[in-house]
Image (cartoon, rainbow, N blue to C red; front, top):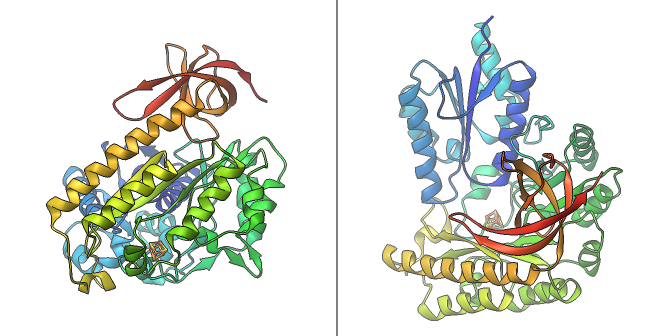
Length: 434
Ligand code: SF4
């Protein structure tokens, strides 16, 4: 029997990436060959994003690409755009299945029955937001673990609660079981993911307790908390970062440096509370890496609001700022707000933030010079260069002809190479860890 090929395209956040990795694992285990999205395949899965207008645009381009290149293939569209723009997608000829987020974990069953001639309907699949296999055939070195889904915040600009539903937490036993499986499969870095993970609560087991349980697992691995909302943390949370397995990096979504705009966004913190969290972290761990999301051009954002945002980005020294341009999301409160900002102003503000972010990135890397990082190697090349990320989430390259992928190496950082993409730190390898 001919081996079937399947290609995936993932747009948007790490949660989507986890879900693709899990679905890919199901197909891989059943003998499918996973190929690049540009190659010919019998099945294409496009896991879409709708968080901004740009997310919609990129998702549509990926769908059109698959429809054009392989008119005979089975095409599955899932993810947040499959929720928010289902009617529009149903008008497109050539899409076989539109799968909502709650049934995404069942895509393998759907495609399998399609080829068996027992085609089932999407609606007949049982919904389960945590019904995903452990992604032991992930597409990356770091293994993403879904611990939570949905959000109850309803920030005024955000469509996520409308397309992902209300907040739900995955049972802690399932989370730990999933992590045990991927560690046994050889993964060395675990990244927690969800929509609003700091609100994790499984029958009284909160986010901090879950982290403690994970840190208590046996084995040579490290844990990374990816993106959190600045909801406020206990003293104990800050203390957890003293554990050598917990990476000293947090992506805390600030969105704006103006209290007036933060309040109009419907978010639950003030700048002074945010700075309190920053000071706790930087006070205890001076090299702690903080990155953030900033939204520019929220309705009513004045030059003064924007100036305050620039100032706080400099003051905190975020080593990377992910800039979002505000775009109207249908059904959100911000859609009806006055004071919409012209596109050219939004583009100009976005460029300024990127410049500040680049300057911060360089300053942060300079602080790490002549210090050691433990690098998890993701790639090696024929010149003997190995590349990966240190625990502070900076990209590092070093020379070691014998370096192996997915292994930790202690590296002394000695330089910064400014490439076309990221600013890569260069170092001298002091040996591998077993
Ligand atoms: S916290 Fe706000 S921005 Fe984040 S997912 Fe929830 S509603 Fe959206």
